[in-house]
Amino acid sequence: MEYVLTATKTEARAGSYYDKIWRLYDLTFKLNGYGRSFDQYFAAHPPPVSRGSRILDAGCGTGLLTLALLRTSRVPVKITALDLSASSVTAARKAVTQSRGRQRDVSYMQGNVLSLPFADNSFDFVVTSGALEYMPLEDGLSELARVIAPGGHLLHIPRGGPRSRHIR
Image (spheres, rainbow, N blue to C red):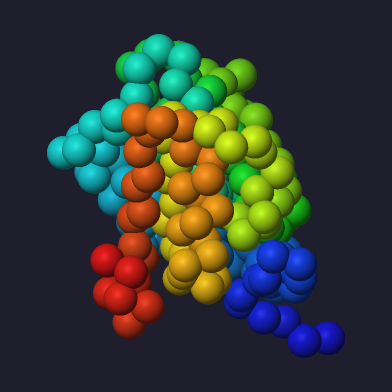
């Protein structure tokens, strides 16, 4: 079976790749401090959210960014954690459930960032980290912009590497 890192609007084989490697992916990012870096970023740059803000974590992986958003948000928010990989979504749900805090503020979905299952203007704040690097950039940004409500915000936190430098 062929595994790919990218997806298209109609074909999402990349999800099966991440379904196979999610444990290694999760462990690597925990060991290298990637999750803690979100806390540091949000301490210096608080998310533009208010009570009841609708947040999309697009490409949530195993939930590191979702958890950082929960730790950072001082008011109740509604986070939707979405990823192409069903295994990653399950891991994100488990990580949030095992954390202290407001687990009920998070819902989970398997889905493709290039074809989001949401109406236009659905979110006040859309965050992503390490997802745009693996898709056609214009298509990804267009689809994320479509679901941002007027006055809303998009935050992409790049992971590093040549594609991330280009996006930045």
